[in-house]
Amino acid sequence: MNTRRVLATLAVLGLTTLAAACGGDTAATGGSGATGAAKEVRLGFFPNITHATALVGVEKDLYAKHLGVPVKTSTFNAGPAAIEAIFSGAIDATYIGPNPAINAWSKSGGKAINIIAGAASGGVFLVVKPEINTVEDLRGKKIATPQLGNTQDVALRHWLQEKGLKTDTKGGGDVHIVPQENAQTLQTFATGDIDGAWVPEPFASRLVQESKGKILQDERDLWPDKQFVITHLIVRQEWAKANPGLVKKLLEAHVEATKFINDDPAGAATTVNAAIEKLTQKPLKPEVLQSAFKNITFTNDPIASSLTASADHAVKVGLLKPVDLNGIYDLKPLNEVLAAQGLAAVK
Image 1 (cartoon, rainbow, N blue to C red):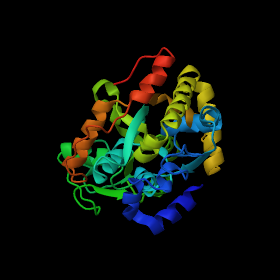
Image 2: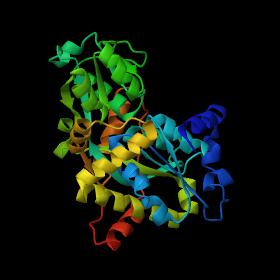
Image 3: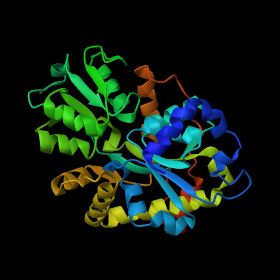
Image 4: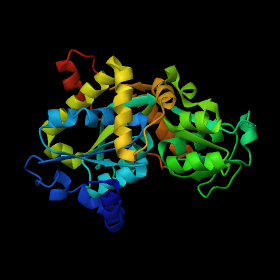
């Protein structure tokens, strides 16, 4: 299943299919019915460095090895589209950022998804034109984010709010936020149509190296111990309840991919670049790959405290109503997998 097919399905189904996603029909159990084990696993992720865990898992056939059933993958450009695929029952699990997961939890009343593992921390920057030196210099400027309401969009809006600068969802205010796909941001920054972007790797490094942008803010510096969740793994609750064995096997593949990345960063970078080339036909330049990889920490820990903070930020900028996140994590399967390998549990 490719992204175009997923989005075509969503255009028909829309968000009204949330009820089906939370029900007990065959779509909610991977096409096998509520009482049988799924005969395939449908996994989503982004062709980004911050989703290296998924890219390694696919490229090294780790998911196929552990799951023992066919694995169908779908790629997305931003979190809200991946969440729509979860809601419609088009995918069973996906790697995603914190704020779309929070939105899914909120919209479904806590019945659509669970977070089952961390994946990556860091790797997000505000890159601007060379003449911009201070936050105040951003007044009247156009700054891009990947999509309205996605993780980087919320982070930028909250950061500007903390600095006393106003924004709105229509691109008005003191700083004009322009939601656009990351690939488009590379072009608009180069042509001068935007003045900066709050983006994840590898796009931040590409803006710096290819268009002479400069880093005005490293998001790591805004978080305790420089750690915050940028990517984690979520599952559709109905599928997970019907297929607990597959959930555990999915996590076994996830943990092995994380170990591979941390044991051999250079080899992992090469593997990730090969996967990106297959998905986009555009491999990263070696210098971009090296820069992006060193800016990200790959971990099984979901860094839960940063999720709570991200939710608070989204509420403060008017993109989320107050939400109780109690129950959003289901880390028992992950900790069972970690314990079996002699690794420390996560909270």
